[in-house]
Length: 321
Image (cartoon, rainbow, N blue to C red; front, side, top):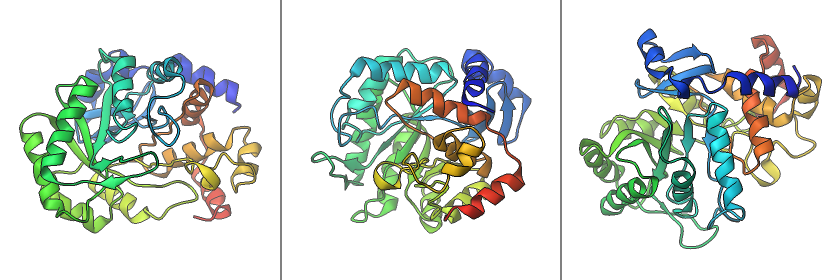
């Protein structure tokens, strides 16, 4: 199937969940995954219906993930177009910008369409461009939740994720503060980022965990154990760097292992990598990000690429995981 055909199919029917099908679909199923007019979906936390191909907003910032994007109006167009194409799960963090990414989402999309889920993260600080430092102190995280609510213009955050575990603070103390925020109605569900199976189980003793966000893609499968755990527990797995991230690890760079296979199927390497993630597991929730409208359209078209299990297995064998 060629890219032009992909885009026609996606544009024609992708926004089904956002235009009124949410409650009807929820009423029809009690399982964790179902199929809707916009393709495969997942019930995050058992009650949030998300289209499995979401959008990561991190790239809608300045260089070094610092400050406002160079073209603020274009960034807002990208966010609005993502929703038009059927995205109802947008991932951000208070550290992106810092703060500007959450503010931009509110500028572009508030008042939010019914069914749109904004997931954010806290627990990392940004002293300067390129610097990331953990802060898991309960008092800091309590403040971070309140500030994210204000910037995003939300009364409750549907999914709040601990951006990283702060090794200087017992995770029970960090998540204890988040449990209080959840009990106060400020957070609906809680997720973790960059964690092992042991750390997930440790966290679940303090608070229910509905999702994990770890680095994962077809050429980087170090988090396979965490993915398998999420499948078993019916938890969402949100792979960051779904197409390899930036720099030399990016799958969009020429000469990568998927190039020949993508060309053989008349799609881009990026579409191929995203389609692989979607077929890999029913709990997989990729969040490819871009600041380009054209790339956004290309990414969303990946949901329509269908290959047999044997074809995917053969392709995996050609790629070093």
